[in-house]
Image 1 (cartoon, rainbow, N blue to C red):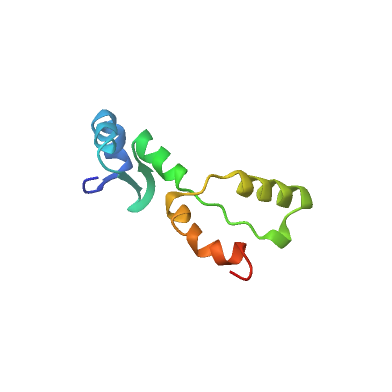
Image 2: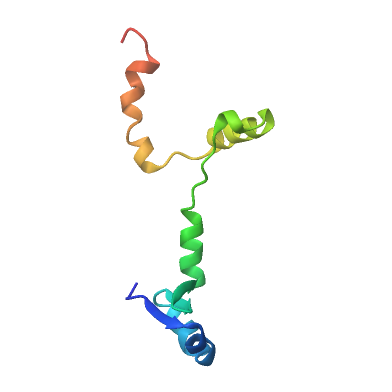
Length: 98
């Protein structure tokens, strides 16, 4: 992505098409009274960010049903290539006395 553009809300409103096109290349920060108010970005960038979103869960603050759902989701999640590359480290653990 290119350099982020910073503009006033009035400038954004007066040149909406220009800045929505610009937001497809790099985020556009819209200010109100000199303070950052909004960030406009492409749908593709938004989806990329959402895909990398992580949620923090404190297990002792979850209900038993929520905890069970979480553990099930973890059990069903595919291992990343990075995690699979470390599987060999568990070989001795899986075979006691080896």
